[in-house]
Structure formats: C-alpha cells, structure tokens
Image (cartoon, rainbow, N blue to C red; front, side, top):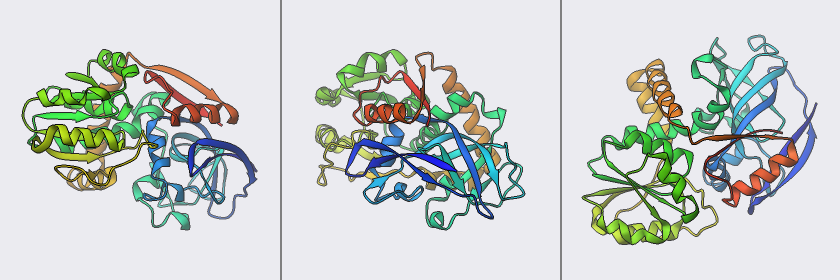
Length: 346
C-alpha cells in the first residue's frame, strides 16, 4: 500500500513536503485509512515540542523531518488482528498522512492500544484508540474539540483548587484557551491576552471578562487580587511582561502550549517559577479517583455544553495533500482566522 505523508522540517516548522512510501500490513498489525482530522494550534504545539516531549517519536520520519500527530477518525482497510475488523471506524491519534499502521493490543469492544515497539516508552494516553461511538456526537466537532477540550477540562479541574482571584490566559483565541475560559468564567475573573487582529473575535465569544492586546500587558496591573497565568502561547517576551507587571501578585504560572513557537522563551523570569502543564498526568489521577467511566461521563457533559456555545465556529474542509501542506503553513505562521475550524484529509 502506498502511503502519503506530510513531513514537516524540524528546524523550520512552517515548511512541509509531501512524501510517499510503501507500507505492508504484517501479522498482528492493522492498516487504517485516516479519514478526517483537525488542524489546530494544538498541532503546532506538538511540532514545537517534537523533541523535548517526544511527539516526533510517535510517527517516525526521515532525518530532519517530523510527522505531526493529529486527532481524528480512521477506517480499518486491512487487519491481521482477529479482534479488529476491516471496516471498523476508530477515533484516535494519527499521523498527518493518508494511512496509519498500528499494532493493536488489549482489544475490547471499546477499542485497543497501539503496542508498537517504538511507542512503548511514550505517553500512554496517546496510545489508546476507541471504536467510534455516537455518544460523543458529531465527528467533525469531535475532531476539532475533543482532544483540545480534554486539556481545557483538566486544566479547569486543577485551577478549581487554586486560591487565585484572576486567571490570565495568553493566546486567548486558541480553542483550548476558549474552552478553559468558558469553564472558569463565573468562578474567577477570566482575562484573555490576544493579538490586535483577534481581539474582536475573542470579545465576541463572551467567554472572557476582560480582553487585552499583547501590547497592553500593563493593563493587567489594574486586575484585582492574586493571579494565575495560563500560557498557551509560549511567547517568552509576553510571559516575561506578565510576570514583571503582576510581580508578587502572580502566584501561579502554568505553561501549556507553544502556538508562538518562533518567539524566544526567556529562561530567567521575575517572580514565581513557571510549571509545565502535562494533561496526561492529571487525567490519570482523576481516572483513579472517579474511574474511567466517571471521568468520561463528566467530560462528555462538559464538552456538550461547550459545543452548544460555539455559534462563532465556521468549519472548512481541507482535501488533498497539497491543500493540507498549505493549511499547515498558514497555521504555523499564525495566519488562520480563529473562528475557523479546519478538518482535513490527505
């Protein structure tokens, strides 16, 4: 089977190329056709942390290149595993490619894990695959929001225990930040930092109490009480300005994303030390407390409420390898309308 892949240059994330290779399905393996996946700022974060958080290791590519992981749906086209039938539709973590080869293990009526040797040491939350279920709702919206909203939801669970009065979210137009803002509003004052071009959109969502441009960080000084920074942008200069402006009132600083992957991250910051946020570790703790079914029930209820509030969303279908490359270049450069939801197929 000839597989088409989108390979991104590791040292120039905005540059990508189309490549093909032959893939065979061996004993114990399953080949799937990747049918639809979302392209969001989350995927840029995967690429930006491809080395240090090992996102490049999930779908290895040739030297100097990486295949960006994406979330969506795929159909089984060939199976050498008795418990995974041809034609089965599967939700999970795929390569930005036409097909994916997995090695299913621990299969059940709900799904399986990919037990491929090269994924053994990687974060297990990304190795789980679920057979498609109508319980999650519309597949296009699942592609766009399900993986992102899990991060929003788990961040909110963590922040519910925070003593701060004000949350400051960078990259406020990103879908993960929007999800967190919608969850937290009413419990804490929610402030969004965004680019001037996206300010009107961010304000129009109604999720934020206050919206400021990145150039107006000094306005944070007027905010009440203690504050927590939730940094989705990865922009070291913005992070530094927030730390310097809030001073001792900033009691928490959480690093979540790197949508501004090309901006320098400053190693020395005034005040509280930033902590990287890793959703899988929090998910594991909550599943241990509530059980998997309890966690999923709470998550799906919250996701449904968020989806119902997304009247601002405009969905665009991206079809074909060249179109995906062009869409990726725009996304990596930050040129995508935040109201746009891109769902693609190579």
